[in-house]
Length: 284
Image 1 (cartoon, rainbow, N blue to C red):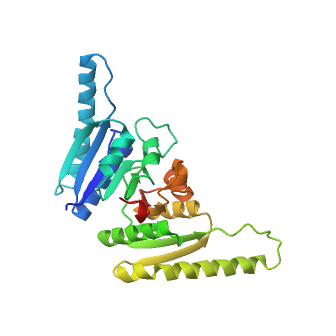
Image 2 (cartoon, rainbow, N blue to C red):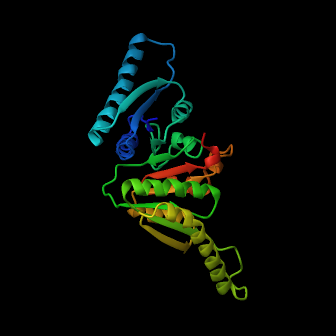
Image 3 (cartoon, rainbow, N blue to C red):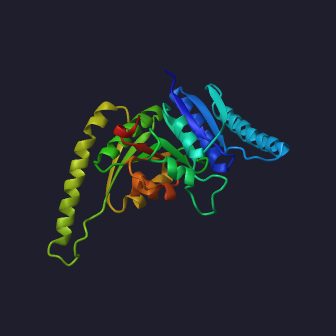
């Protein structure tokens, strides 16, 4: 069965950057690329107005195809203009796809907001990895960053991160950011206790990583363990990365709850594309 990457487009600059990312990723995976542009349902009105609208939407699809061909000439590319609700249709198209790629903010976004409503609705809720792209990169660093804290969702992110690093022949930086418990700084032995807890957690995390380093011996791995807020630490690491990867809870009614506080914060602050990977039990 042919691997497929789905990219949602709306004509915005971030969505065209997403097309370029998706095309290059499809080439790396030897996968087909499916470009999707969702056109809201037609309302009753003048036929000529609807014809003009259709030409506009067809133009968005044509430009996305052109960008994709420029980035990867040897992949299979298809494009669809679909009517319906954007989020519902993209979720449907994501079924069976290896990956969904979207721009960080669409045509209806507000200046200063990196993550749009579509990205927020899809990330952490769509089956499989969702990659959110803000802009076309100026540099290739040959390094991926993955956040890991020993949880089940971060293990799913690890599996994706190692596979992606192997495909790209890139280095993988494993980041464990630990926030000390809220203890009174004046408590006796505070500093020594915090250091002990940090060392304990770091040792545990390194032990948990062993299966992946054994499975992917060709991937060069760097371990980074620091005391600090994960969103801040990963955002800083993203400055010199080609992709930053985190896991998602993949459940919850409130979007930010399902996505998780780290994924939610990172999507608003990262300097490179972000991959949100759902837990295995939620990938159907």
